[in-house]
Length: 387
Image (tube, rainbow, N blue to C red):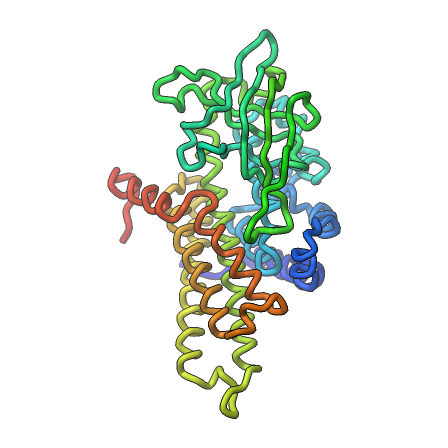
């Protein structure tokens, strides 16, 4: 058993950390308050090849292993979780296109997606369907050599920049069970009837947009059906969400680590009754619990990622990692705020932003209770075991 990163992974992590410390951390809180899109940061991420982390070298991507994939989101989220979100949905879409796309779709989209010239997201959630994706109402009707799509999507990250946007639709609304009639269609920006309507205001997760998207009689060529075969959409999406949960777990870990770092630093500097508050046992117990749980989350996440690198299905493993890391994130950010006392509630200190970012981690890519159900199904079915 080897719990160490490889030399190559350590060098990659160091490069990421340097980038975050120089270009993200110094501006994150100010730009978030201003509602400013991090254009300059995005340009650097393009130069670093980070938009190609889930695209193979054949198409110009980095083709990262999954442990290195998690390092990207962990390190960037230590600086600004919203910036990591720009890469998150894009990387999920790229993964799906490479794994399930036709040769023509891969050749058309992946090279430009790898460089960031094109960016993407994933159109799943609807006003009446989030966890229950089989309940979506967006319909795609075949009309000659086109599909005509009608429906509404919401909470779509990267909606204003996605080109194409993979959209989950029902190509056979009468299918039973419903997932057998679901497909993914790649909708290109500028297609008539495809409209990004508004940015949704959020508690946290600033920096990237989350939008409502209207599809009103959007005509898309048949060749934009992902994989070229109807009825595979739910399978494609759920498979992709395994990597998505590693992404959100890693983001959770990055936010939690940033909260711990801030709390530890503050506890050493803040004095009460003539000595640093880090000398008080009450503060020490909080720091010890935070550090222990964060490191446990890190090991669980890297384990799940390494299992994925073996080519395994990792429903249970990624579910465990996402569940535990996101709950640790929520706890760590609150504890960091408590250690800061009144200053933790001030926008002058970073923990206020981290505290607002944390709730998304226990919701996004499947709530904690959904993760527990995913884990339990794997265990009860006998497909997975522990110990």
